[in-house]
Image (cartoon, rainbow, N blue to C red; front, side, top):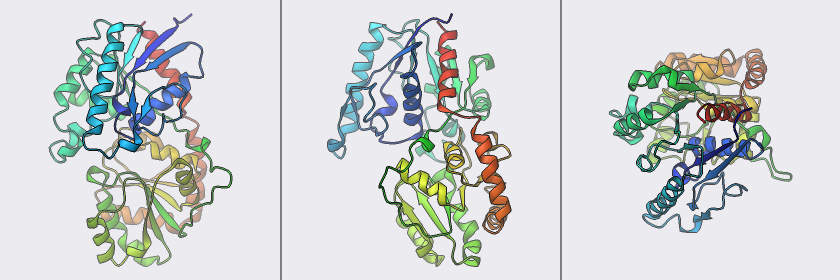
Length: 373
């Protein structure tokens, strides 16, 4: 029999971030664990404006949505949350500590308690000099945390290789655990109208700057859009279009065919379900949750052939070289004109999705905790 576990999570990823892949990951872990009787967990969080845990039964934090626009409010919330977390850590009423981001505030307080760190990607190590916004300067901090960790969870085999490339870590300390998605469980609420969609359209999801490679992708597909005057591009989430983007669309004479949509779960599922294809031109992803979301919406997937993306989608995607305009344009032309290819990718995506689930992620994570106790 495995021992009964008590795990402590901290506030970091839930402070000042309403949405985001990392807070979603920890929320889904806790949601799965809340249905199990062989694990107990605490979330050390007093103030948050995170949407995922807003209504959750396992957190009794206070919301500060109405104050979110005040200057420095996130810093204040973070300091208060950190003081509260330190109290809980020093009290020691847990078997394993699993922080939700890379701050080192807990290192002196944790003593000899087992520590698990989840490593999502090495974007800041790869691109920190090129794009300081992605977190240049985190390296020494991460190195210290990874050295102290009793186990490192990597969300893909690709990310594991990145850890070994950039950090002095023993390979046996790293456990690869893939992610899942629950998007297909958040169907449209009854009576919620479907947003009017310009058909047919390609779907792009999430942030568009830096290594996400949206500008390069848009440049590459302009000839395809001009050849197919009924084809549109919808960008979901990632913030409204910048002036730079608007002028890009305008000068290419395509401004009336590129549309922005905010990304609620229900709206996102509908966008995947009706898209000709989901396109992901990113140069670097630790995992790529939107691939699973597209699979769950029965949406054909067209991907950059870089980083973790081929590991996650395997044979269930059409691939292109994200730094070669012709390669991108050729893949998009194929997906737009080949109905049999689309049908084949839909079928393969549905099959591939069976390999991933949030409950499977939680089960494998619990095995990591149990191995340390």
